[in-house]
Length: 234
Image (cartoon, rainbow, N blue to C red):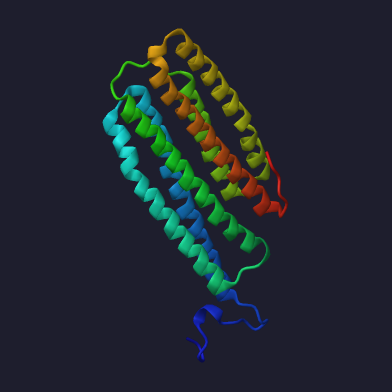
């Protein structure tokens, strides 16, 4: 306290609030670091879930499910920090947009984590049953979706609008791979009805990966809005 005024709001001679600004910048930096940490856990979940499916590693699939709680905890922690920052610092303009977009991005990240868990559960359901075919396009699709998540978060940190746009456009490649997986598995089911159950599970995996890419695209759109104040859809 300085003369009864909280130190965070101690003013300089020009009437500004240097200490308050420094405090805000530090807290915002911390928020971004937390969000990137959450993002790294989400990327790891996607990678492990698809690996568990391809290698039929039930233990790894269970690990993905157990670690989802950590992602959920980060979402709650970051959301609470955002609310506190808005309440105490009353940010405006771009600062307010940034915090608002963080609250939306963490929701996208949490849902990506949920989709990774859905894939790991399918890996558990298929278990050690022989796969109807070697998995080629699903891992390719997963790699692309992971790249989108990673680049979308990088575009946020760097406020790189062009990277956000380039990343969002990759969603079309994911959609094409999903269509290819659908056609191939449909052919398997028509040729051999005994493959219907597992093929249906694999169709769901493609759908979950497509949703992950959609959420990464959402993050890119939020980055563009945060940086420019204008909305773009892909």
